[in-house]
Length: 93
Length: 284
Image 1 (cartoon, chains in turn red, blue):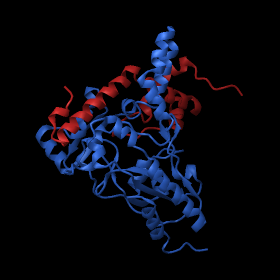
Image 2 (image 1 turned 45 degrees about the vertical axis):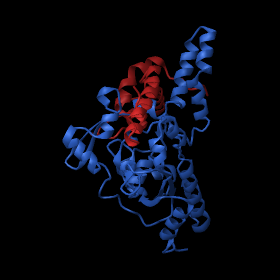
Image 3 (image 1 turned 60 degrees about the horizontal axis):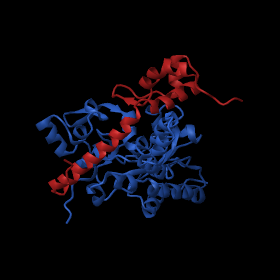
Image 4 (image 1 turned 90 degrees about the vertical axis):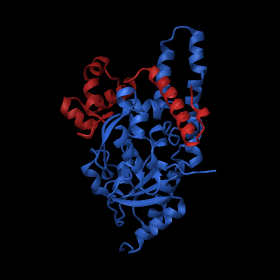
């Protein structure tokens, strides 16, 4: 059996819809659908949906977002330390 | 052989002895209304009747006020509470003779878990979902969770009536400023993950960007590794490739993913500012 490779065209065609239906962007109106449920809705097979979802979860944001995550945490953590310990000097400039 | 009348009490005593801070039992069938197929207890263990949930190993006051975010991301581990879950699974099989499946802490595919431990904790009456997302216990705040699916018919606990979130200081802040500590620190409409409101005394989450949250909770983890690997493969210059592969981001990521099933959380900022998660105990 050949290694399963997701067709990039299939990925590009369905990425946004799969992301909208799965659990990656949650709203209070509905729970995220399982891969099987999404497959039934989009007329795809479950394995294809799983691959689209897994790739899309990584593909949502560029690498720069990971750098922003580091900055966010550094700043938020310093602000909390400054507040909790009553040490304004710990706050990042 | 009949099921011992004191089995549930004995199980809970064991859990606390093994190191759990809290323990509860959820009805396996109760997951059906909330979890999609393949993510329900009976999908993993046919004939499952109950799910035993333990919580604990929460960060200490010193961890919360540490000046480096990398401290909690190193200490934020499910390993200690997983050990309790594993020991309970062993006890259920050896002492009672029922199947007991320790819920794997990793993911079934992509970022989707085998079974939602948060849902399990909620159904076992150990806490309620907070506006920021994590389950909060009214007594103990933020905790780590582990669960065991079993065919044993333990007495089940119902969900808690009153949630810990929103805490009184958050309600006051909402009335005063129209926001809460978690919403202010990580707002979805300004590059963060969360959106929501307080509806009377009830917290209502309207937006959760799990993909962005993933870049923060798993910064130096599988996703980060894949992103830098992709960047490295696309970089034609050998020396520039070396800077990416040997650099701090990749090095820290490789340290983290070698503990990938236990060192699972690397962002705590919505919980760090949450009065219900840990309070702000005065320490000397």
